[in-house]
Image (cartoon, rainbow, N blue to C red; front, top):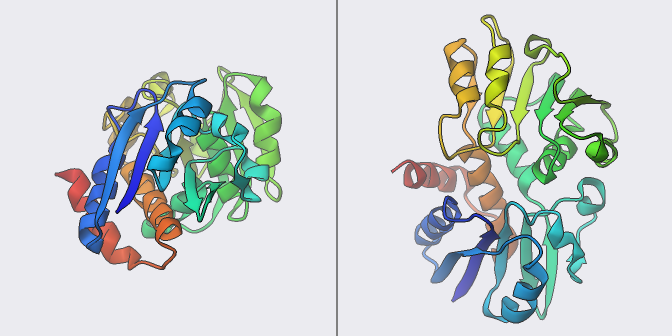
Amino acid sequence: MIRGAVLGSPITHSLSPRLHRAAFTFLGLKAQYDAIDVPAGTLSTFFNERCEEFDYFSLTMPLKEEVLTLPVTKSSLLTQIQSANTLYRTGESWSLTSTDGSGFISALAYANLHSFERVLILGAGGTSRAVAGALDSVSKEIHVLGRSSVRAPALESAVQSADFEYIRWGLDFDFNSYDLVVNTTPAGAADLLVEKVRGGLRAVLFDVIYKPWPTVLASGWKDSGAKVINGLELLIYQGIDQLELILKQDLDRQSLAEHLRKALKE
């Protein structure tokens, strides 16, 4: 019996249980996956008290940075992005990594998008750093729009090859100057930016939010005639990457992804 759970707060909106359970059914595995509300500041206590019950955890907000404080083995990737979403057992010990970036790149590839001139990332949290790190090798310029300059150094550290610029929220910018825009902000945080969406957009919007859907920004983007990628695609591919880690095997990613799309859209 494999047992996993998604941890975060609030957690009732998460589709991770549906995704992982559907994957287990597709793969013919005997497994269990739950959603557990773990508020900020309580992860260490939860982990110490209950880690023996589980084989892996998926981490969502607000735990993607807090999890870095746990005394577990950390992948080298985390030094760059300072964000993690996957905590898994290896024998008697636990390891920590992130599949947000690899899942994001796989989702872009599914949409036949592989390289970019200029990218704008909305938000400066853990998911933003994972996305920035993943885009570092496929984009010439990466700009991040954030509310506080305090997070700017961490974002810049996640980008090692591309040209980087941090833009303070509220300053003027033009969506039309980018070919990819990624929204990593919490639901509703980017709603007002729809005022900047105009006809003739060439940029693709990848909105990592999947519930509620469509977001105000995604609706405005689609109405302008430009392409929008639903956050379910990131959820699907980061989940597949997690399962390959847990199961220690390569999966039929295309067939599994199609099965998960159907399961999540029901």
